[in-house]
Length: 434
Image (tube, rainbow, N blue to C red; front, side, top):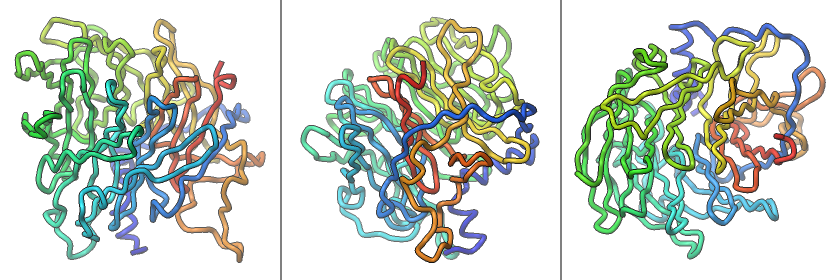
């Protein structure tokens, strides 16, 4: 399992970064070599029994009960939803995907990940997620994977509802509920390369039946819903599919940025667009993973073109970044976990925010660990533990992670980042972020 081939297969998300880098060049190294302003967060380890490579993705959200819900990946085995209670720092598994769907499949047939950006049902408070395939080993076929399931965990009852398998052999990359209208929006994924097949689907929560609006050709799609209940799904090439439940019809929208055609960064093949909506559901916020720009789009527009604008580089002192962690808090502030390449150091994680109306994003600092004893990185013989490699000691002794994957803002003002290997939740208190 630990061959070079299997390592690359099991982390194709980061392999994709390498491919992009080969085409456009690695992120330009930061020119400012002054010691970083550390932003030290309190770290909590997601129990290793729910992963086998200390892996998770952008699967994190806060529930209405103030607890955090984190999806994990256990390749070839199973996937789990873990609940974190900030009052006592306890983590517990609340959804065992295989138990819910009643399967014992292993290998590529397993439900290996909860990769979806978790979302909360506004009427019930249920946590909506989807399961996804892992990566095939030698001799395994893509069709060995039966397909991913849409699930909803209810913190009030402790039960998880199964909404079935939307599309055979496709995983689930996005689940966005609209409980007010009895609907849920799904994006499936076949993990195809170089072009992904990803179907935009609408689920009737009552009948559990799906309607398929076809292949979007877009990798890692996010879905947002506007203040009129219309759902938005990205299309390959920089366009957007908008579905209106009132008319039960979908239309294709063009996009502009600052009054002109959109930049190649968001229209190129393989562009990974991380989306979230404002609290009033009138603005769509967006970052493209590798191009160091924050965008917003006006979802109140009645035109056939969705107008957008730029808000400057996410990090001003470097040309390119890696940003796959974006969320909007309950006051409308945008939060981002961002990786930059620093000369003589390597990758470094930063926390950045943007307040609507501001001129530029605000850099809060490089992310460090306030309690480095939260985990032991070596075994009893002093050898490094496997899959603990993205947490390192900087020259000044600060322990720092460098692979942020997900971010969520809490109602009380905390901001929470998920980092990989070891799978770690890092929390920043409101007073640190003023």
